[in-house]
Length: 315
Image (cartoon, rainbow, N blue to C red; front, side, top):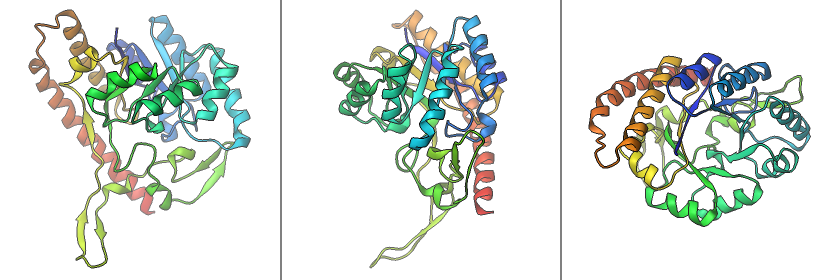
């Protein structure tokens, strides 16, 4: 049975995801999960979410997908030990060294390789499996025909982002934002936060979505260039993803409103259940009007947040 995974940027959002049909919800550990702190959670809130989800027979996945220094590994292990005591079900990691040390110290926790690992072929997936991951999030532009092949040859579970944001490079690999903010600080736990680097406890300020001028030797100057960074839904391909053996369909969106995320989860739940109940007779068309409504709301919210981030980067 395919798993529907949704994002929880607050306890209320976690509840909305569970109540609208998510099988699992992922949350971000404060200071460790590539998002602004207002969309992350402290340990007590993660424990509250774990209790709520487990009470409903659902799973909790915790993202600790920044890239720590060697002297932060002790804090990382303390953090995982705390979460293991709740318990949590899975952990999302990017660093292969941390995968290995987590597997050695906490074998009861399943490790999922983040989209930031940039897994584009089955050799990548096999590498992360050997590091300790039981499931991998594939690069968001991977062709459908490659997914089943990757799962079979690498021997890992496969997770696909059905709602997310692309990047002008690969998700988790862009360094443009780090050139806008150079400040860094260390919190009370010894965790470093580099303001412009989401991989190191800071933020992506989405400066790729400003307009750019491009000059190339021997060419004329090009103005008004906007780099590719779009939000997307995978919708019509849901039946094909299920048939290909994809294990998890993931909805990103911790920074969006609780009502929007809950509605997205509910729509995908109905599509998945409708197909599983009657594959031969299933039609996607009746669900498209609702999808267009959600796209509109999503785009409005994204434009507002992007404008705020770009303005913040300029100050």
